[in-house]
Image 1: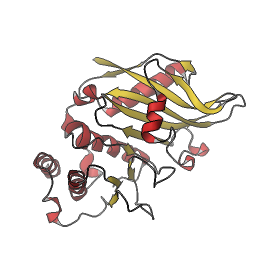
Image 2 (image 1 turned 120 degrees about the vertical axis):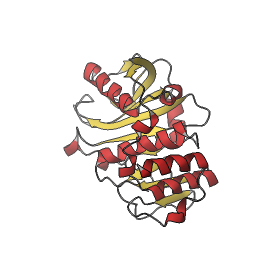
Image 3 (image 1 turned 180 degrees about the vertical axis):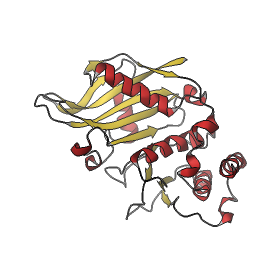
Image 4 (image 1 turned 30 degrees about the horizontal axis):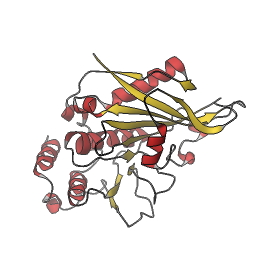
Length: 265
């Protein structure tokens, strides 16, 4: 069993202050996260409703070129967070060492570490110790083996082609699965495939609609394409219908071989 320490912070309701930086470990700067993404809580609160308090969640993975870590955020709602006992949305963010992700640390193990931390400490305030992630290396292809059920081969090739031609392009990707968990898992797999394994470009994913589609810095993994997608710098690709077989001719050779192997098994 390997153990990797990760710096982390929690943003959310603080008694007598409102929304603020609630807790942090010593060696992380929440301000750098906010400058990078432009927000602490990126999703529309309607998608984390009080009725589904312990089920409705979102995940954000944010990667930057040259960074030794990848931001991993669990976005969720909890009750009794301020002096009046009100519920609110929280962002619990870890800065996960990229080297561990490259060596087989699975995003599922990052998620489990966050859950264990809440079980032990609740939603703390003030200074907190780095979070320990316990993990066993997961082979890359095993970690993404369910991807073929969530995204079509044609869409995978369009993503690779798009990033090869324009590293700054952003995508709205539809997920074949209709559940919240399907969108989260697809985001994990696409990050591992396109960024951590291929090193194609630093890629960020968000599993729920953002507050502002025009300004978000993240690619989106959604159940359906929004009615309005900004034209500048964005592409919408659907996994629900496969395109013609000729759509993958421009994919990089390494990516094409991986995609062909995945979808032929």
